[in-house]
Image (cartoon, rainbow, N blue to C red; front, side, top):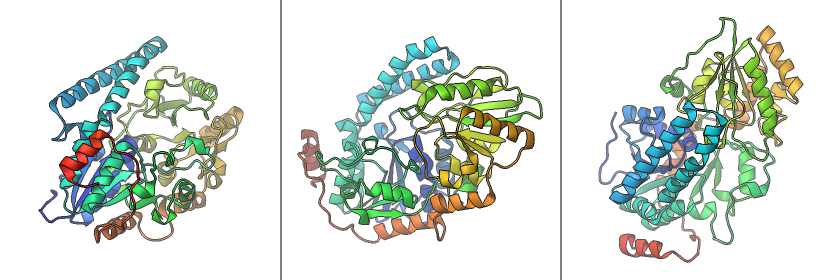
Length: 457
């Protein structure tokens, strides 16, 4: 089915910046394309990836005729910038492939600096006045419709939503994850800035949250709580599950004996709240356990900053970045993790899991529902692992799984994706309410862009 567009058709423009956005917002795009007759455009502004070969984008292309466009390839972007971005991106991915083929610590350290430098160059291009002007020009052409970002406040989102407001288009912020840290310090959260005059309410007509706990925390950083609405998680809900099962690539790997337990260890990103030596100790022990076949799934942002000490042997593998976590969970007999929202995929499939609680010095919304999976020390974790290898018993009850998903993913009533579509219908039904935009001096480029290109402020 191909997307049909006409001059008077309402347009929904999705602006996605990272793998997490794609993961959590593509389910909404898919449902919208299936059940509504709006024109749909997808613009990627991730500095590193174009997502041309991503399995989710391939699904949108094959199923709905939706072609994602990269910000730096839009018509209004100059040839020099397009060429430079291609060169930087090619170099970055080439060095990253070299780092994966030669994972010795000395190689990792040598390549870390050029990888970070190229990453910063690409981020600067995506945040340049030229790139922002190109996207605002695309939005400025829309006669009516809706502009969708993730939960972001940045210069590009500000410029684009400013133009959208001037054109009478509604604006919407959708979740790019299921926030679940219950006690993350306030200074570690990206908050609206009084100095810049920015807040989510100024940029967006509605801000969607997946569950009540995350909405309560979000409200601490929002100046207008009436704009927040809780709709459940599009990514982890039952409505997206069958499609994800069909489109995600398969993973089949079993190098050990037929009775080996297949363990997936999901590595969250490094940070000040993670005891990395404790993670190293668990990793080394898992690698030496001959009863196991172990696959490590790195967080996308740990590749440049380093991985724990993974001892290579025929029973151990590091999953390639392009392989989705859901495919690995489907493969695994047991999932080991600390502080990752993929827990909702795990319990959605009713796969056994063990939560390494002790190396992470914060707490999570899912923990009250999954106390039976919690490991509070190195010895506790391996006692639980030994018990699972011997018995293959479930690590949580069916009731625990249902309660967790109901509270943090599915909500209390009705299909999750229908709630998203109903909200979008309401925003498309009439012009957004008038609200003041952040008052701050515009840059010379912004002033010229608004005065000459759009005629709006």
